[in-house]
Image 1 (cartoon, one colour):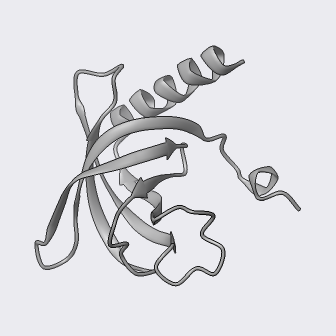
Image 2 (cartoon, helix red, strand yellow):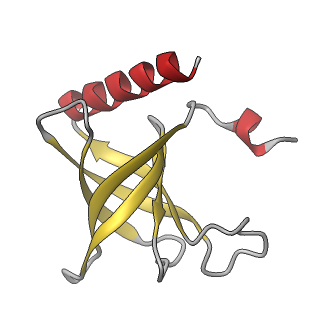
Length: 117
């Protein structure tokens, strides 16, 4: 089955800079979100984090004046993936995201889907 048909939320392409913090305070800046959904994001990284890593994310979408801050969990990584399809990075499930930030995210996705459609 096509992987995109199993997703609960539609993904939209993005090119957004993000800051990722992992436990212990290590920060990865200038990483790039390449797609976004209400359920998660794909983050392009040269040195992908491992599956199960909890992260704090900060990123700003072009439609919003605010920075979105949330926590997430690495649910996919190209670090050990057999078929990474040329992608280097991590899939992060969004967790602990505020209602206002979720509304900004939903608005961005809705606008992007209208432009694509």
